[in-house]
Structures are given as structure tokens and as C-alpha cells.
Length: 98
Image (cartoon, rainbow, N blue to C red; front, side):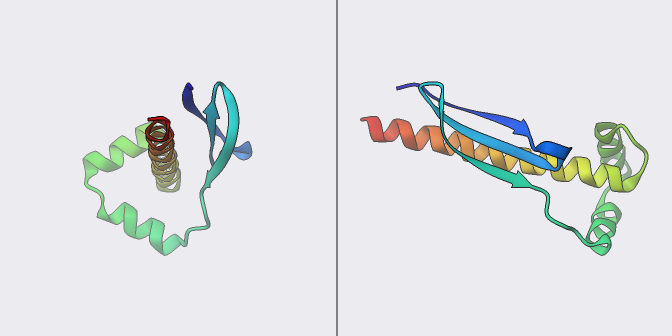
């Protein structure tokens, strides 16, 4: 059987929806949304970055606002988590075939 997954933005752009597919049909899904984060946590993150890292996340956010850079970082992190879960699901599903 063919296994795959797709990751699409959640409505409002507040995270990602991972759809796990078998034979091109959705078996299940999981959402990777961005939970509330305190301003202190965002500030601590920003202050921990080098100038080069700050520039990178401002470019990815297409904004010079630190909160936008933090959101871009959190979205990228949630996407990476969704992708890792999708990859694990495919490996697990294929291992059950043998």
C-alpha cells in the first residue's frame, strides 16, 4: 500500500494540520496549533538570539517586529514536528506490511 501525508495550514494560520494518507485517502489527522505564549517567553527567546539569528527570523517573517519573528519561528517548529510525526507514521505503517 502507498502511504503518504500532507501538511496544510490551519484556518487563521495558527498552526498546521497533518493528514495521514493510505492509498491517497485520509486515515486520520493531527493538528499542531500554536498555544498561547507569555510575553516573557517570547522576550527571553528574542534576547537569546544572535543578531544573525534575529535577522534570519525577521526575514522569514517578512517583518522587523520581534513578535512576528517569534511567530515565524513557532510556526516553523510546529511544521517540523508535524513532518516528523508524518515520517514516523509512514515508517511504522511500512514496517507493519512485512
